[in-house]
Image 1: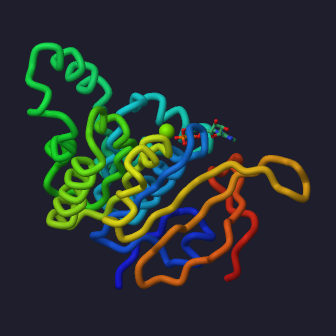
Image 2: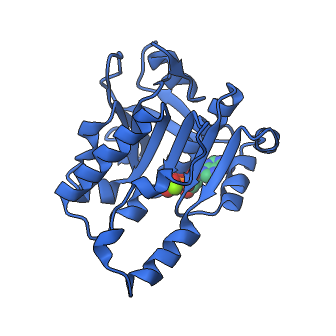
Length: 234
Ligand SMILES: Nc1ncnc2c1ncn2[C@@H]1O[C@H](COP(=O)(O)OP(=O)(O)O)[C@@H](O)[C@H]1O
Ligand SMILES: [Mg+2]
């Protein structure tokens, strides 16, 4: 079974990385580190020579670049080689919202496949950050339907993917996306009952055919990005 290392050391040591041609789901609150996780995985994929596309719907590519630079991750080298490409859908979304005023809403609401139309054929890895921008006005049933279709299309195209959904959106749809994916990781903040201090924790909710820790893993965001510090056994 082939896997792609994420660049987050402990995850790679425990799981071996993300299974190729499968979809991983990443959920979490605002500020929990979803985008940083996505950048970690994207950078590590292109380091392994894989054609990587980062679809951003909320931030522009410049901001992601700045975020990567704050960890001394050099994206330029890989951008020049064409190994990593950023697709900005923020502007398109803004235009869609404008258009919604005049166009029949049903023709585009929640059409996740539109996201893939912007991706070159030779793509190996895709990060979608985030799908939350595309779910307005969907019922849970419609969401599940479109999400399943997206997962199916990604697999048909032999793409390994990380799909990011903020926890508010995920909860709105009863976490239905969890059932369609190969694996899912959740990022949270919680209060440590012993120290009374807030800490960041990660839950590997599921990963098919893989041994995963039952405990929450504590992580920090430091000068190297996401760094898991406890809650795992190698
Ligand atoms: N260079 C850095 N060093 C330490 N922490 C950082 C750094 N850059 C960002 N962070 C932390 O990461 C958070 C943002 O993470 P992000 O991945 O954008 O969250 P999300 O996408 O889940 O909303 C910031 O609020 C900050 O706490
Ligand atoms: Mg983000």
